[in-house]
Image: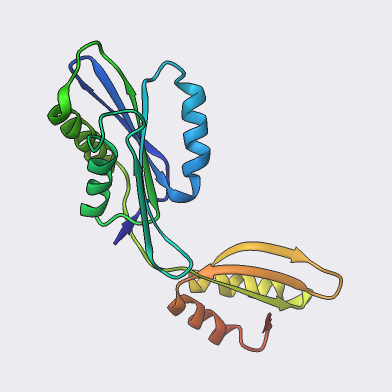
Length: 191
């Protein structure tokens, strides 16, 4: 499986209709959709498709034709996401009508091609499941902890400076967490 870490877009023009496909991490889906609706008030359709993992590691999928003929836009877009094995990703395709009706076959092809185009230009990264962990440490050990975090490939999500200690939330694969725990064993206390 693969995922994306950045918002990427590409434009495809077919018979004067413009298809602007936006690929993004699923976590940014609602924010980007709202922004695109504001940026493109004259666009006819905002076709969407997404795939993400829920808290039980089950794949959740969805799509919307947003007024296009049923099954001609959202489902073909989702099918491309499935075929590319993308996860935790979403696509929003903004369509400007060019004056010529495309028909169902051309619509399916246009939305599929726009999705493939943006996926090709995006930097796909192999998906690895990230785990969250939280621990506390002494103020005097923060520098050592940050060094060990960097060496282990772990990401710091949050640091809270509390009266008696520092609370740190991290994200990493299970292997990276194991390496970090081994190296920082006597310096941290898991919460």
